[in-house]
Amino acid sequence: MIKLIVSILIGALCGYLAGQIMGSNGNFIRNAALGILGSVVGGLVANFLGIYTTYYSIGGILVSVGGACLVIFLARKFFK
Image (cartoon, one colour):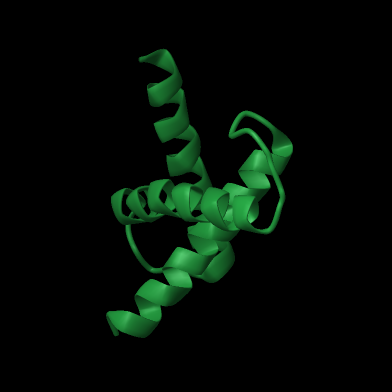
């Protein structure tokens, strides 16, 4: 249970960071939700490329921020 809560908080933080990087005008809740989804997407893409990280490491956070940036980019393209 604690691991799930920490993962959600890290995903929300990564979403906030990705929102700042991408210049997103969304609110914190939207960026947090996209960050959580982006963490999952980033992890899947990294695993597909043979990069294995944990969410509790610097590499995991970088992968999550990258995935969140990708999700924000795709959200802009599809929901504009």
